Image (cartoon, rainbow, N blue to C red; front, side, top):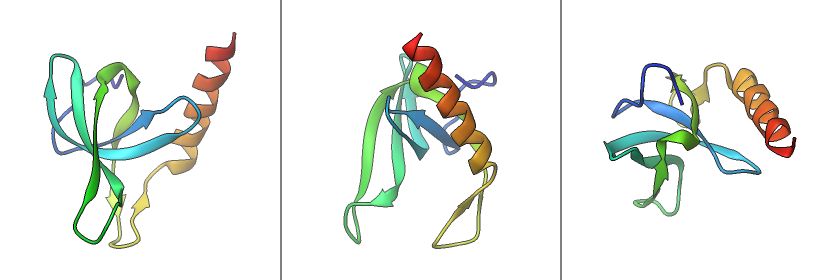
Length: 90
């Protein structure tokens, strides 16, 4: 989990075992965060998920540009996720 804690309104990388997603934290309660993900389900609906804060492994990250977004340090986040996956296999 990020050392500063999880902050509402900020974007974080969330581990989903085989992959990860970036999402904006909508709320935090009892060590669970509700995240809205960057991909849309439809034109007006976004994927919202409730995850344990321990699954948030990187962030906050900054978004640049508008549609499509660019995520700062994306390569670094990918490397961190690969490292986590290797550690889980040990």
